[in-house]
Image 1: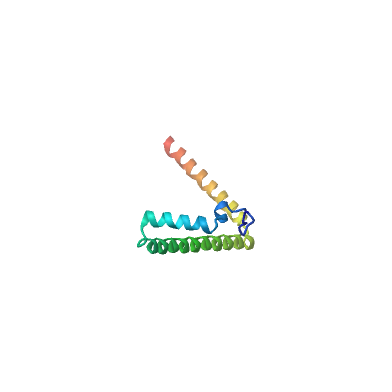
Image 2: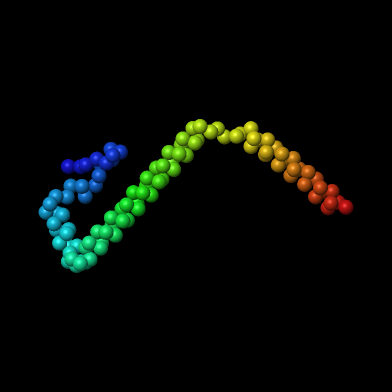
Length: 104
């Protein structure tokens, strides 16, 4: 049995864990870390998960804002072309001045 995530992608077999498997994992964790450390580990994991979710939400918000802004604004291509032409003229004038100074 596979569970599907929100976007329709099947989740790995971790989602198929039953009660016996979870109890075995809990027993191994208690043996490895000790019963006193488990609440601290759970708190740290919870904090990390909350931060991760908040960052993902922030990325989603940024992507949505960028997509919305891209849809409402057009690239100022005419301004960029004019600016590029002006820079080319300035560069040509600088090159001509260099040539004039190097010949003198």
